[in-house]
Length: 240
Image (cartoon, rainbow, N blue to C red; front, side):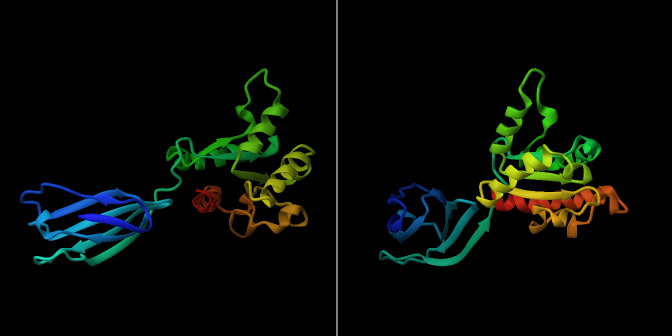
């Protein structure tokens, strides 16, 4: 059997001694458009074979052919074709870098969110960083700046304390929004406590939980953080 590229891909010649095998799967074929021919004598017992091409962001492009070829060289007929997306989430060894900006008065909320992010961290979808990760002896401003620049996803935990913080609001948020504007990072405001955040530059962004309802206004805070995590998961799929 031969695969000759029409557009993209690389030539491929398949020679196999299949014995009594009636099916054949060929995986790892370079993505491209091919013209395929099969010599009946090459696969005397094969009635169908599967060609699998991997794409970026796609688990597999699977084409199943049937082979009622007769005696002459023939083009196999396509029996079915399936394009399956990879739903396993972002495939990264350490996960997408996530920076969490928050006021220390909201430490308990940051901890609660971190607990709810455990499933995403367990799947290696995210690597979450916040300033409690800074080790003693490091210059904290340099470390924060470095982590903020590395992050692909930036979570701003918004509250009255956050908005009134010269560092969170004046430095971290400002730089986060600059990166968001250039699409080098994605910013998500997470509204913890009631505050007029719509009057700030964050007002143009879609916030979590749903409809920007503050976490403290939910009757069940676990449900609120679950809603936040689901929104983060959606964003991660687009960032992958």
